[in-house]
Image (tube, rainbow, N blue to C red; front, side, top):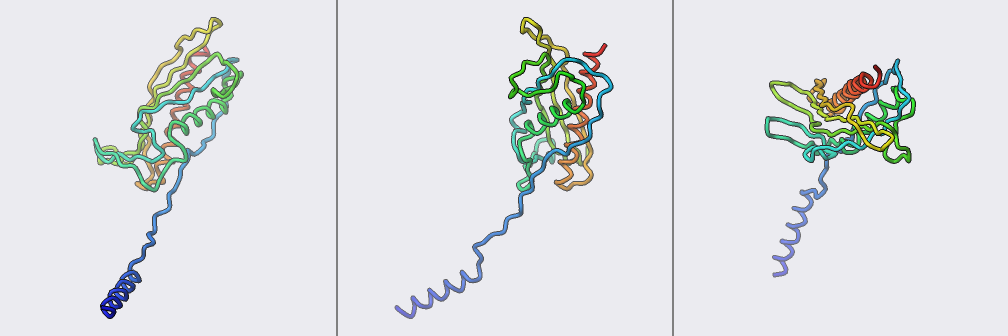
Amino acid sequence: MRILLLIVMLGGASVSACISLRSEYPKTTYYRLENHSVPKSARTVSEDLLVRPFTIDSEFATDRILVMTSATEVQPLMYHRWVSEPDDLITAYVTRYMQQSGFFLGGVVTPASSLLPSLLLEGHIGECIAVQSTQEGNVVRLRIHCTVQRRNAADRVEVLLQKVYTQIVRRESDAASSIALAMSAAVHALSEALLADIQAVLVR
């Protein structure tokens, strides 16, 4: 009996020596939106702008980078993530774009400010995803419904602009790292188009 027990113990030791309990996981890479230079606006208005936090459809409300591989299949990338959820990143980018444009002489603020600006910007993100398909190729798609309102002296608001902005930007490759660069370009182009429409409404 003692001999049998010794054989079992030695056999167990040799098996555990061959099997490593330590598993190596790939390193998780985090991405942010790349800052692009913002040209100074040749036109200005004396008004100020409040940018409210953008909302987002629940299917895109995740810090994982999402890739659509077919008409119905979406895969979250396990080891490639945004530093924050897309609605936070995009809200911050649009706010910074409006600030750096210099168009709003009264300033561009967030809800954290105690000011009550005359203009309000809201956005709802309906799509924010990378796509791999034989038809479109490797692209990112971004769609945001934007609304600009003005608050009058009676604290009532009127809608000045309401529009859906869509950007499709081709990725440089099928690498995950190309998604952040293409999405940055999409958000930048959308911010540029949005400001141009606001300028057209406010500057006659």
